[in-house]
Image 1 (spheres, one colour):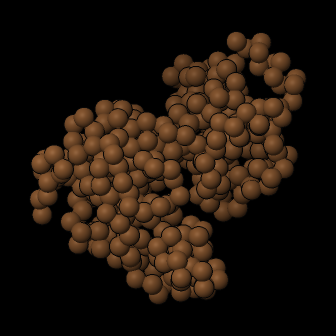
Image 2 (cartoon, one colour):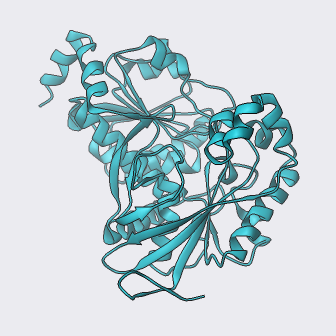
Image 3 (cartoon, helix red, strand yellow):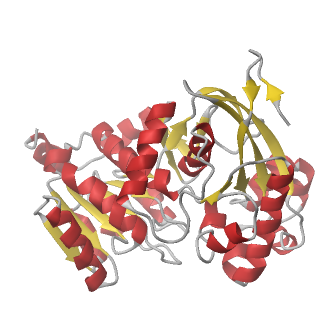
Length: 376
């Protein structure tokens, strides 16, 4: 159905985005306060298998210089624990049911959020069972992660031209593109992963593009010499611990489940851990739901779905486990066109303030600070 904006402009383009509870009690309380308060986490995990998909909210006010759109949040009830423990076909079925709820709202494209984009084959099976295109948002997630890592380095007074960077999981599809994007801006890049062959393939790509100072390794001990880390591994448990990190390091953890142990932020007050970046959405956006971000901010994966709707590109832009450098660059260009910008950082579900960064900087080993000053 065609609607009109407050200015009388027809709103034809739209999207839907699937969310799901990450922190079961906290996130369930956001929509169902009483239920979230009464049920313990194990009960929420158990009953999530039997809950139906849930309509969450109507998203209004997204406006770029080129278009204006609306959207909807719909929720898959599965918690991460359920998604990782149930058979993929069971998880697919629930996500598809949620996608069909989005179709009923009239959505023209569907974005997969958090673990719904990780399960199984990265959205391919889900897209085949729906009548609208599906995107995981990984293309813009990669672009924003690299931008966030570089901006965090700037705020931590790390000159990129003298820095050593590392990409953990560099042999994978997302890690490969992160490494390709980051390598031209740093002095040296270390590619870390489990497969030496895959790492060497990525090294070849980067060297062919002109960066000659590239190392590969399978040992996490190499992190001790790095200033900037982007981690995107597919590990089930955390693989980056307090003892791995150099004083003053920036770690951008894009992996789900997280690669960085919570012990890092508890024990290391001299390193900055971020989870990609928050994206500022253009227009006077109202999500009509508190998903834990400041006003007008969104996850990069959410933003990719919005960008495609604004651009009227109703296609499955990012699907599966493979992602190309050209996809990431194309999405970054579209984001810029429509006015999406990096809007800040988060760490373990909480915003990172400038004051927090200044406190971290005050705890850096003075020898590291002196060394970095020589890079300028």
